Length: 160
Image (cartoon, rainbow, N blue to C red; front, side):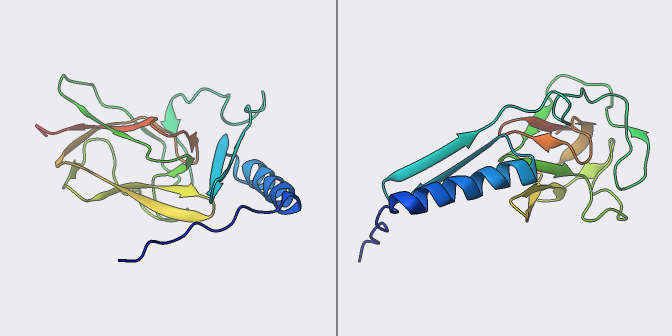
């Protein structure tokens, strides 16, 4: 079995250009953090959210995102709920496109492996699937809201 060799570390001007490019992505995508590793070289950029940015405004009330629906996003919680967390930093979307129906609504029954939402990260749409069957007890994030790694997105009641 052959072992894949790491690429050589980038030259200093290339590192500066990469840092500038990553900084631009942070601003463009509204990300709070990005990390890249090239061989032995690791680059990690973080930024604080702007005081007037969408990440500083508390999410309240109903969802009024691209789906056009204005429905409450939470049902009464019960013990034994499972939490679905964001596996990455990105933007949370409840539907595949602005005019489409949401993947799930509070109260919906879901199957293991069923798509719950998508998270857009660096122009890639990543489907987030249910790890277990059950009933959607709560949707904890507003449509179009930035999410962080490990942030709770859904509560699923496996007793459904």
